[in-house]
View 1: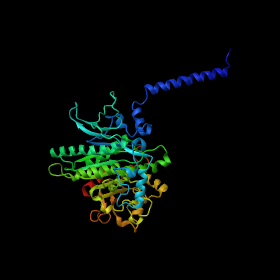
View 2: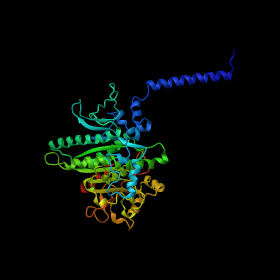
View 3: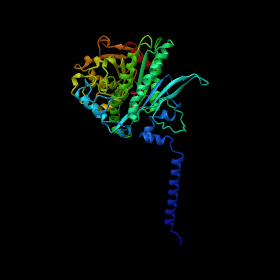
View 4: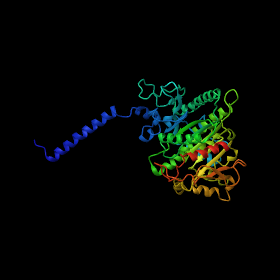
Length: 467
């Protein structure tokens, strides 16, 4: 029986479709992502999720250019992570002392999210002299993607053997273990006659995948190092987090909430419990005391400032006097209202209004050339710290008493516009319009990301030296 022309076309199409399905199945079996099963187990198997653990996939492909640590934070379903309700969480206080009611409510909302953050990997960048040439090698201390199987394509070989079972509990455990590693490194540096003077924790902002975040932090950390004279020896810690979402309109709010969550929990515990604990243990026989500095850009500034004021959320709580020596927000993507006690009845409860009780100082930059923050201002009405609207709010006669206003020149020199910040405890607010003015390749918001230059390194170094 002879087939019609149309029937032949349909048969041919079905044959091609069958071949396509077979080819696709073969590709999945033989050419798929080898980390797929582990990513699926952790709930981080989308293409976007993968961009926040690139160093796990490619251990020696990139990393810090100096000795230090990378802490990789990711996000997954709370049931998969094994997270209990806030009231039953032994690591956190459900009603932190000193939090305004609005602030306590915001904290509870973040902890009640169906998806939560966790620490998936910690990498130590260390100079290896045993190789044919000296090389900064990435050594995994913790790798949640390791299942114990024998055949590894990626030689992560993490150092730590974990005692706890759930990914959430392990996140707390790895911070405890990291404190012990840091103690050994502080001791070794002191014994060699070159003790660390600062521990600097840095993180980046919205829509910054891990590889780009590390590149950017290398620029910031390196420029600080180059700007300083004898006697300055920092130990750097880079924190990367899942700062991007596939739903553009809702992404900024969703990621702002994630920044607050990480500030409430992981950055909070790292800085206020473990680093401050190491500083308190300093003595002539172990290591000299050091300064703790946190630096964040955009939503990263939100994350770090949130951490600076969240010691009370830990169990046991940490007093503000025992926390950071300096927190620097570069083009911060958070409301200036957070510092204003006069606006305490707002949605967030002015969580930074007790800045005078903080152990150290808060320093912020803003620029009239930053168009990223003003766009978000229009959406949220938040008067973001990095934008001209933030400066307008801060310079209002009703509120300007909270701030010490400075100006940065185009070559990174700071000039006070009035009272010096260290004469009276105030928030250091820097007009960096003369310096933060150029668009950076591959970024939006005009000059929002113009912070990776040597002159900014000079400003950061000045802040770390003087405040």
